[in-house]
Image (cartoon, rainbow, N blue to C red; front, top):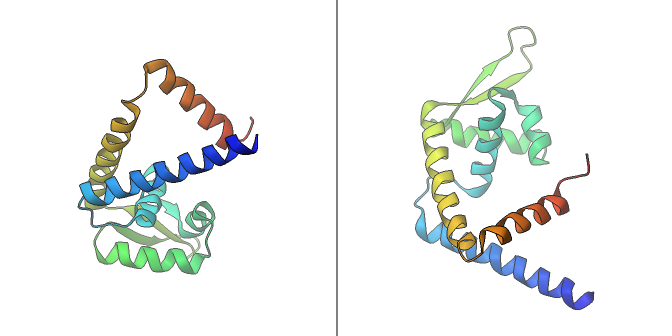
Length: 139
């Protein structure tokens, strides 16, 4: 079992490095990976509270504020205050933010598909099911 664990660990690390390298060398993106992850969270949820984003990203709210400041300066997100509770701050993607995110996600998916092309269709399904089984808690 230890040998298999080591092989899996090495293969996962190599895959991550290769994907990151391909991503950096192929895509000229104005956003970083953490910014992409944050923008994707906003994209999936729509207008949402900064505190909810901090939970999703598993960071302190102050770290989210810094990231949102940068994204807002670039015109990718906009903030607004809750009319009922002025302390609550919402954030949402701007049209430019959606455009940039969709472009980056499309390019990232194209890279991932090039790796999956090495597998047979049945292997892709099995690989997907096994990954999901490992990372998604039982329902």
